[in-house]
Amino acid sequence: MLYFKQNGEVEDLGDVYFAFYVDNELVSEMPLQNSGYILDEESSSCTNNATVTWNYTEWFPEVRNLTKTRTKCTLYFTKTKKVQTALGELEVYEYTPDFTKSACDDETCESHEKGIFETKDADGPTYYYRGSVENNYVLFANRYWRIIRINGDGTIRMIYDGTTAHDNGESSTDRQIGTSPFNATTYNDNMYVGYMYTSGEAHGTGTSSTIKTANDNFYTSVLASYSQYIDTNAGFCGDRSTLNNQSGVGTGTVTTYNGGYIRAVESDPDLTCANTSDLYTVSSSNQGNKALTYPVGLITVDEVLLSGTGGGVFDGSLNHQLISPNSYLTTGNHFWTMTPAGGYNPFVLTQWSSHVFRVNASGGIDDDGSTGARSLRPVINVRSDVTINGSGTKEDPYTVS
Image (cartoon, rainbow, N blue to C red; front, top):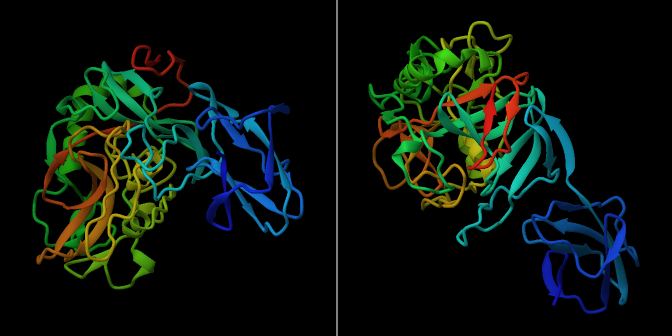
């Protein structure tokens, strides 16, 4: 039996009838989830002044203002829109997912969304891969990578994934470049949440973090000979903005919650970077802090949310970590993001510490003391004017030339 939502409550259809049109042809059943179809809300309508929208996570219509019997709703479904990118033509979902829900093929996930979705970054529309996608493999520099998104400037952002191709959720240390503390020196200063930092400054870039040094070493040893394919303008955001724009925080041991903390808790990803000083770029870039020696960084917690890991890492007294065990990002190992959480004394613990977000072995998001040894997974941006071959699958990965 088909069900619908009336003012947020699931009810039996009763005297509400639906007519489904797919590509303008009347059909007997609505299209299946993840089949590439979305509801054309402008064309769809109901009688008796009822209104209808589509719940993409649970995949059924939500009818509101239903006051009379024998209401008929006519629903029109169209395919995802097609966009031209450096990867060729892609089918993209335009609706905004519910980021409080984890998305993957595993039964432990709350949503089974799978595909490429659209949002915006500082440069325009960006297309990100969400769920247990299997069409974002890249073979580059004799290593495998997974595409995170097509940036707003058309470049391709991707994360390291090993010397061989790995399945989604596969547990393997090959999918990382060893382990490293984010900052090995100590944990007792807010500056250690920075990918680069300066003592006494909330947004300093005078000293490289431990993880940055390891990342730079990977670049010089593996990627330097492929530098002609790597974009040098796009940046990597290590957002040290503060929660609600707090004043007098961000240095020393003053309790501080960075902007990424609230975005992770509220499942509200944002791909813009609040401060130029936190957008890490190389000297030739036309944006950012121009503090990097090499164009390599890490994934952000916002990109992890977009990929299908649900947020809400805290519920006030207990850790609440949604997992995505079958996500393309999940490796069976904890790995660092580039996003600071802050400097504070977390519940249960009794010691103040600087914290940076990580992705857990099972795909969840958590904060972690900056001195902990976690996996390094480099992130780079491939230029938009390269030639791309392949279909992006594990068996036929994209290649760059």
